[in-house]
Image (tube, rainbow, N blue to C red; front, top):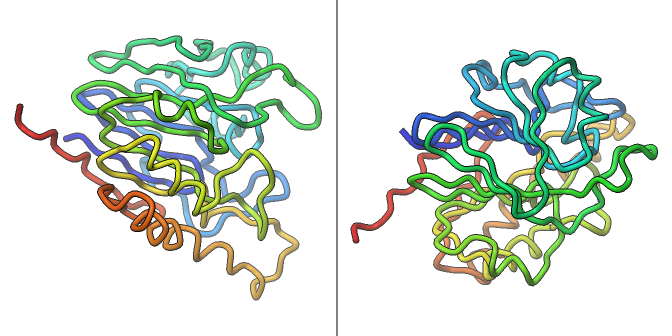
Length: 254
């Protein structure tokens, strides 16, 4: 079976051609000042072949979460990230720059550029870039990590089967370097995937925001779907709840 499971925020389990990958693992109920809505799906980090980390921000690189995963599982990360990642133990780290690639079984993971500051607050790894990843096998899956819209998206992944696109963040507003629902829908026009799933929304919130002001957890996914219907009507959009799965679409017969 070829499928993805969205665990919430930017954590996605990708199962393709006998290889299982996990992106930006956040496996705890909190990350610093951020709390998590809902539980982490059970078994989401079992049986992994590799972990993909897009950049060093705390909501994408959670060292405590990495320590919960079998240390034999290698980690793919942006070039220059290894000094920070060593704090998660003796795990093998494979550093990639945009365009670089590594194979796991029948699947190739290729690093793609992202328009996002990728350093580790409050100041470590400032020169470490943010990445996206193209996962290539019998299907082609693009995990954008965290990024703003950029013209080069049109050339990232011809013949893309699925795009995993960030559509919000973890608070009531988002700043530069992020896609909102409208921007993510415009990205679909450039990427032209067969299907898309919105991620990076609906999961994390600052602890100090009272329950009555957490509406931003609920609407980004559906707003993206509505915008996508206008901007890229040929793309099939699946809005998942955390723990929800999607079978990767079959490619048309040649």
